[in-house]
Image (cartoon, rainbow, N blue to C red; front, top):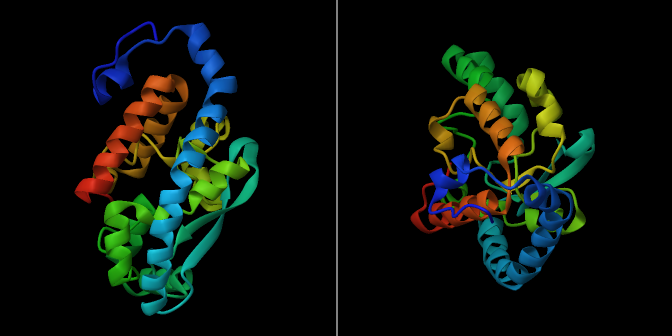
Length: 224
């Protein structure tokens, strides 16, 4: 790299050599995704085996998938370890109907700070972000990247407005700039702006900085 990146903030601000960045985005990023995913796969499978057993004891299926919007608008199945009670999607509508404050929070942020649908195990998994491990399969399939904007459902894409073009230009990520920037304290509008920044600035240095910070989230349990 033409510029030394000392930490996460430097990676966000540091200029990148245009040719180097262009090569990484067109060719290097996919190679990086596949190589690191294969390297992480044995450990991920071991952890997932433990999580599947634990999820079984909490009731319901251990895995959950939802259709998300990927690069160029392609719809794909995004996999996660289940962290919510069964029928969670219908339950959110009931909660919004009976509680105006919950309805307002959901409409504004598309998430609830104290979501009653999350199971006890789910709270632990979300703190460590280990519920995202099955998405390594999405990365290997080419649906996702290790780093990028978080994948959204079709109904959320409208919140991106003019930024939809940026979101659709790259593969969504298992982790991303928004996730390591205090996601519980960030509005959806700010998330959209962070995604725009990432798409405009992403490089190998930026991706590595985000992955290192993600490791800190896992170890320190400071996730969502």
